[in-house]
Image (cartoon, rainbow, N blue to C red; front, top):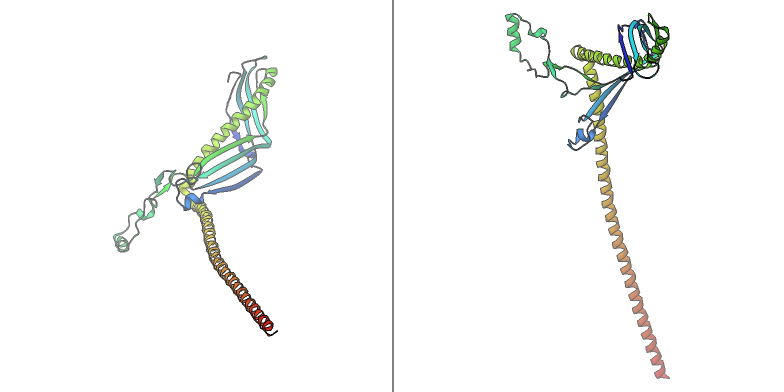
Length: 307
């Protein structure tokens, strides 16, 4: 950039102590049931527009390595003092070393082109007698997908390299004083550039390994796809069971609601009949009282006439 110029050459990593301290594998599956089950165009999909996504994570920590006799050149263009230095240095990653994180995404069939399978033993010439026996049997017709395979299985979603410890031992440089200043300037730049270059190299290596895995690792592919399908089928089955239980509970509630309405109706009719019976009894009691009053008046009038 405008402030610093840095170059390095002959970077050859010695992987004798590359054995990492810890390696972990993890997987993450995303399922969008509404888009998968209801076939709704407006339903939520993944960021790339799919109904399912599957990710795999690989984390490697505590990686050690060395690079000896690396040719370097560093120049400070601005400020005081201005430094220019070149020479040879040994780069040593020890202690915590560096951490590597890989994130892979399982590719869908529509995302990767298919390549034809190599000629199998079935396509080799056979004798006429064997050919006659073979032609007498009905052979299933192979589809295009059966005669081809996906070119790749995974998408390298992200590769991160974090360098914790880096020691630089400078030798065969021109100036002793400027070498120390150049070392102080070179350290952060070297860390950043080496981490970036390692991440690029790992991404390229993973792409090549993915193509080899797709070519020769049919068993691994079936294991990954089978696991994804099992997860998806379990999710779909759970959703269907939940919907069935909800329908059954709703039907029971509707039946209970109908029975409750009938019970309320019967209770209203019973209350109405009871009120009518009470009114009839009150009316009969009033008639009885009137009759008694009339009889008392008649007896009183008769008694008065006798007197």
